Length: 99
Image (cartoon, rainbow, N blue to C red):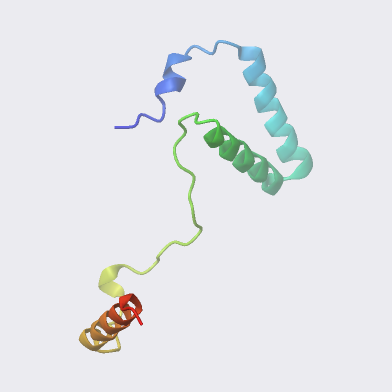
């Protein structure tokens, strides 16, 4: 199982408290001077860059879509599922047929 904090645990205690404080101070400054949205953008870009360097960070959310309806609350399918399955099969077989 992936331990997202594994590498961080090995760095405790902080090996360079001054550098860490500089990063935290910089983030605080961006939030104060430029706002939360700018700070979020910068953090997103840094996390994306960290992934490009294969730093083993937990995955970023790939989409903002969240299904707010549970499967139990979804309405019944309005069409004929068996008929639609037959249509999909006919389309796929005609697409793969030569001619």
